[in-house]
Image (cartoon, rainbow, N blue to C red; front, side, top):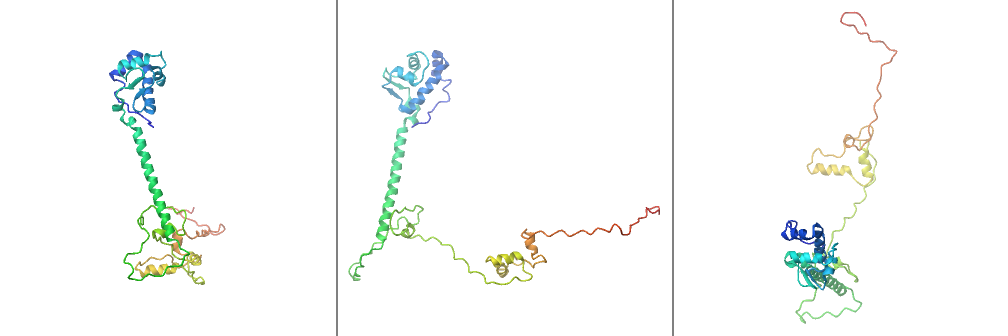
Length: 281
């Protein structure tokens, strides 16, 4: 269904528009536009055959006297044809996109049908492959002699292997990944737990907590130094509060408490200063 029509930018100043306004006034422009838009939805070819002049005026919602609007359109040649067989002037040439909406709809319907037929065909092929790969309870046949046949044995189709589309299986003992031969990487096994040990006196508490959770920061430091990254260490020697300076600079250690400020004793000796004139102050 059409949602718009093509309107020329010269329509307000077109000689036909000026003539229509001269006959019926400005109130005739809106019914003309309404006639065009409704024709794009119900009469996409611009053919109004079968509609009487009164029905055409009702279609345009003409508010004036009957037969006047159609007569004015015929006079300025916005409308053509005999009574009962009217058609819009040059509609197929000026509204080509709207006139071909049925062709676009049919084309989209056929494309959608072809897409779904391809999907259903892929699902049937995947289901057939799954059933052919399913284990059977029948006894295995005896091996045939090597010289009995030179034809290669049939193998499952790998036509869709490596593509992004994976068919959805409705039944069958194997998954789509097994049928298509896809091998996705599995996450590595978790590392074994670290052996228990006591905290060293100069060990940072952050490193010690990481060791308790399975991370050996000392081993990481040794690996970095062995690879040539000199000067790269996660931790340094711990201070009195148990944290190293590197963890403290990264904000991983609590802030140190402020040291108390020692004020002079009020009862102590008073400092006397001598001004330049030599008199004590």
